Image 1 (cartoon, protein in one colour):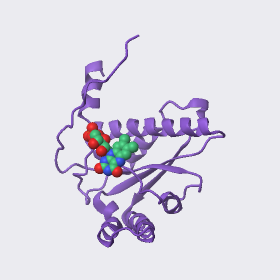
Image 2 (image 1 turned 180 degrees about the vertical axis):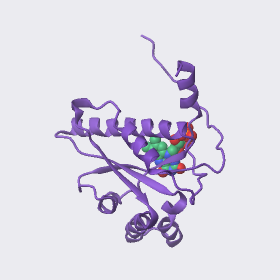
Image 3 (image 1 turned 90 degrees about the vertical axis):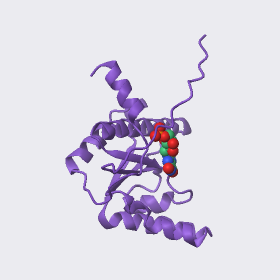
Length: 183
Ligand SMILES: Cc1cc2nc3c(=O)[nH]c(=O)nc-3n(C[C@H](O)[C@H](O)[C@H](O)COP(=O)(O)O)c2cc1C
């Protein structure tokens, strides 16, 4: 791969929910994506990523659990009901969590490592021709997501990532030039 190839891959990756919910992604591909996530830089080699792959009915279980939290928080009924089926929009959803460290600084470093790993995964998914979207976990639903995903209760859920085969293309939002202080 040339630097230009890598630049093109990075620039052409998009967040997209234009996903065929009926078309399965081969498990071997998903396994490869998850393994590539682990090649992120990771201070102290704590291997902090916590991963769960939700397919079939577990996607609905996830939505139901989060919706129940939203209902308890007093969210509007339509919003709550929409959430129940939200994760059925792709054939699989990857929940990504970060384990805490032994200090606030290490916990932050773990979080950064996992986020870097997610980008590895998103780029690799794009290279496979897959569409993906990093969705933020609903505020207040961390404990519920941990339970559904089988994560330890102190796991911080960083994202719920929709993954599947694209049904269309998303226009690039572009990027402003980086504001860099050259010193
Ligand atoms: C931490 C994080 C959380 C995100 N959460 C959401 C989300 O909840 N819903 C959503 O539609 N997009 C979400 N996104 C995707 C961004 O909206 C997207 O990256 C941005 O619009 C730029 O588009 P691009 O990724 O195609 O360049 C998230 C991205 C990140 C990094």
